[in-house]
Length: 53
Image (cartoon, rainbow, N blue to C red; front, side):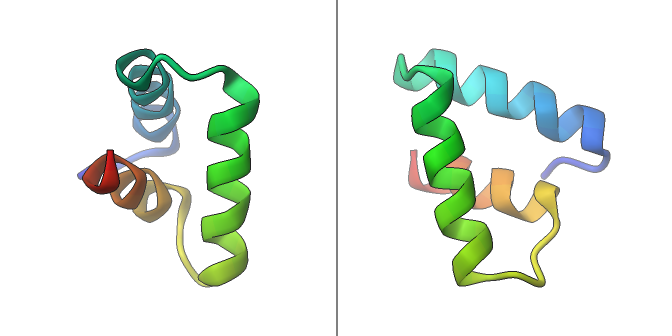
């Protein structure tokens, strides 16, 4: 689990590298998750993306 916004940003970059995705694709996934769960923090969104990756 990520603890800070900086950790979350690093986790997004690592996730994109592991999935070999361009930044815009990761952004689309983040937007989708935030729309589904507007109460979620960025750290929670990154954790969820990582778990589904």
